[in-house]
Length: 85
Image (cartoon, rainbow, N blue to C red; front, side):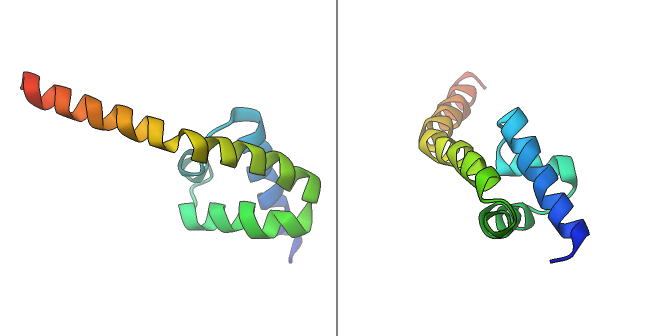
């Protein structure tokens, strides 16, 4: 991989570690697609820096564990708004 790509992947990893943001939010910040961020953090980072990969993986696993809770809250809000409106 070229140096630019390696640097970008490391920047993405450090950003997600420092902010605990979701892949969607990281994609917005770096002006890249969610697919690109996902590939960077899941495949490329593992080869570039296994230690950073493990830290990112912990955060992404936490997001997966919380996903159903956030989805349920959003659905609840949606129907509360429909009832009022």
